[in-house]
Figure 1 (cartoon, rainbow, N blue to C red):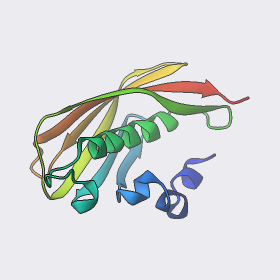
Figure 2: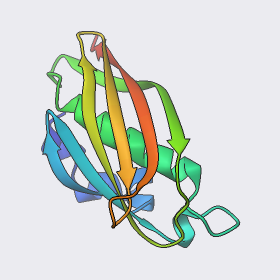
Figure 3: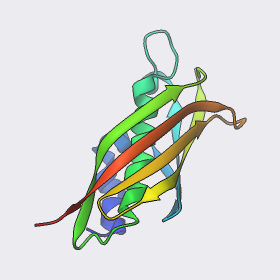
Length: 136
């Protein structure tokens, strides 16, 4: 599957990416930037950004970044592990995730993802390990 197929609006609409209204701002092998609105769809019961929504945003950024660093004709990537530290709460607005590589190997990749608000204040820091799997 090519990037254009993977990222088509029709394909993404029925996924968690579409449900959370995640949008991609930058797509390179060294950096993926995406945004997500903060509102009722992404809130926990107290009206704050749900930590799971932040983790979904972080893994989305890392997954697309990993995809950009493989040959999709021969390999695919899947999440192996993710952790997150939630630094600051947020009730409304937009958060931006930036994924940058810590390690790009043949069988694994490790991505650092920083999520910030509109004032560039840290909301969440995450690290995601992706497995690189050969297609059979």
